[in-house]
Image 1 (cartoon, rainbow, N blue to C red):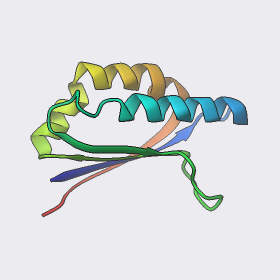
Image 2: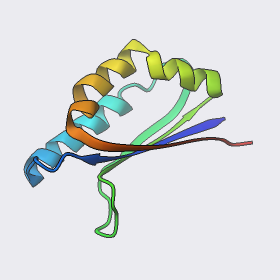
Image 3: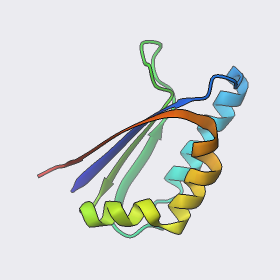
Length: 101
Protein backbone atom coordinates (compact mmCIF):
# COMPACT_ATOMS: atom_id res chain seq x y z
CA UNK A 1 0.00 0.00 0.00
CA UNK A 2 1.16 3.55 -0.76
CA UNK A 3 0.21 6.57 1.33
CA UNK A 4 -0.14 9.97 -0.35
CA UNK A 5 -0.16 12.88 2.10
CA UNK A 6 -0.55 16.50 1.00
CA UNK A 7 -0.51 19.69 3.07
CA UNK A 8 -1.75 22.95 1.55
CA UNK A 9 -1.82 26.54 2.65
CA UNK A 10 -4.53 28.73 1.22
CA UNK A 11 -3.76 32.06 -0.39
CA UNK A 12 -3.63 34.99 2.02
CA UNK A 13 -6.08 37.19 0.15
CA UNK A 14 -9.11 35.14 1.20
CA UNK A 15 -11.20 36.09 4.23
CA UNK A 16 -11.82 33.63 7.03
CA UNK A 17 -15.31 32.96 5.65
CA UNK A 18 -13.97 32.42 2.14
CA UNK A 19 -11.30 30.05 3.46
CA UNK A 20 -13.92 27.96 5.23
CA UNK A 21 -15.92 27.64 2.00
CA UNK A 22 -12.77 26.80 0.03
CA UNK A 23 -11.77 24.12 2.53
CA UNK A 24 -15.27 22.61 2.37
CA UNK A 25 -15.04 22.53 -1.43
CA UNK A 26 -11.63 20.84 -1.36
CA UNK A 27 -12.91 18.27 1.16
CA UNK A 28 -16.08 17.41 -0.75
CA UNK A 29 -14.30 17.37 -4.10
CA UNK A 30 -11.42 15.12 -3.10
CA UNK A 31 -13.42 12.80 -0.85
CA UNK A 32 -15.92 12.47 -3.70
CA UNK A 33 -13.22 10.69 -5.72
CA UNK A 34 -13.69 7.55 -3.62
CA UNK A 35 -15.01 4.85 -5.94
CA UNK A 36 -14.11 6.80 -9.10
CA UNK A 37 -10.35 6.27 -9.24
CA UNK A 38 -9.02 2.73 -9.67
CA UNK A 39 -6.71 1.67 -6.84
CA UNK A 40 -7.77 4.47 -4.48
CA UNK A 41 -8.37 2.69 -1.17
CA UNK A 42 -8.88 5.52 1.32
CA UNK A 43 -9.22 9.28 1.10
CA UNK A 44 -9.84 11.84 3.83
CA UNK A 45 -9.39 15.59 3.91
CA UNK A 46 -8.79 17.31 7.24
CA UNK A 47 -9.64 21.01 7.51
CA UNK A 48 -9.92 21.74 11.23
CA UNK A 49 -6.33 21.94 12.38
CA UNK A 50 -5.44 23.12 15.85
CA UNK A 51 -4.07 26.66 16.25
CA UNK A 52 -0.56 25.19 16.48
CA UNK A 53 -0.82 24.01 12.85
CA UNK A 54 0.98 25.73 10.01
CA UNK A 55 -1.10 24.20 7.20
CA UNK A 56 -4.75 24.81 6.30
CA UNK A 57 -5.72 21.53 4.65
CA UNK A 58 -4.42 17.95 4.73
CA UNK A 59 -5.14 15.14 2.30
CA UNK A 60 -4.57 11.65 3.70
CA UNK A 61 -5.01 8.99 1.03
CA UNK A 62 -3.98 5.41 0.38
CA UNK A 63 -3.52 3.50 -2.87
CA UNK A 64 -3.04 -0.14 -3.75
CA UNK A 65 0.43 0.58 -5.13
CA UNK A 66 2.61 3.21 -6.75
CA UNK A 67 1.06 2.59 -10.17
CA UNK A 68 -2.39 3.38 -8.76
CA UNK A 69 -1.02 6.64 -7.33
CA UNK A 70 0.41 7.55 -10.74
CA UNK A 71 -2.97 6.81 -12.31
CA UNK A 72 -4.71 9.02 -9.75
CA UNK A 73 -2.46 11.93 -10.64
CA UNK A 74 -3.72 11.98 -14.22
CA UNK A 75 -7.25 10.62 -13.71
CA UNK A 76 -9.74 13.10 -15.26
CA UNK A 77 -11.93 13.26 -12.13
CA UNK A 78 -8.90 14.09 -9.94
CA UNK A 79 -7.53 16.62 -12.44
CA UNK A 80 -10.92 18.37 -12.52
CA UNK A 81 -11.07 18.66 -8.71
CA UNK A 82 -7.46 19.83 -8.55
CA UNK A 83 -7.99 22.44 -11.28
CA UNK A 84 -11.34 23.72 -10.00
CA UNK A 85 -11.22 23.39 -6.21
CA UNK A 86 -7.57 23.21 -5.13
CA UNK A 87 -4.97 24.92 -7.33
CA UNK A 88 -6.74 28.28 -7.75
CA UNK A 89 -6.93 28.75 -3.98
CA UNK A 90 -3.66 27.37 -2.62
CA UNK A 91 -0.28 29.05 -2.35
CA UNK A 92 1.85 26.15 -1.13
CA UNK A 93 1.74 22.37 -1.42
CA UNK A 94 3.87 19.83 0.42
CA UNK A 95 3.70 16.15 -0.49
CA UNK A 96 4.95 12.95 1.12
CA UNK A 97 4.40 9.61 -0.62
CA UNK A 98 5.57 6.43 1.09
CA UNK A 99 5.09 2.69 1.05
CA UNK A 100 3.54 0.79 3.92
CA UNK A 101 4.64 -2.80 4.14
